[in-house]
Image (cartoon, rainbow, N blue to C red; front, side, top):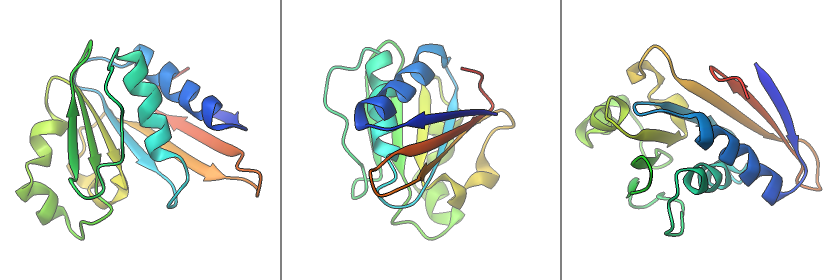
Length: 141
């Protein structure tokens, strides 16, 4: 497990960038953390590393956003879903086992659908100044 401290938003984006530099087609990145922890901020860094030019925003209401870059990026936000069945109806497995990079916010809701080798990123806000502690499993940075 890799542990990183990210005192600023830009530091959090940099962690995402480092992840994005080493992912490969078919990578699944499970993001965990409370509301406002920085999950979408991590995705912004991943997108930068994948040469995605359009702005990355949280897909809370659209649930799935697709971006084209060096590799396709599938950004999924499961905040509004309540079951694995709902995720399956949306076609989540197509993205989980696709040829792009799949990044899932609120991933704990569908962990049972994940491929065996996935990357887990757990983000914790440590104190009132916004410093984040980021734990990464399944990938050495």
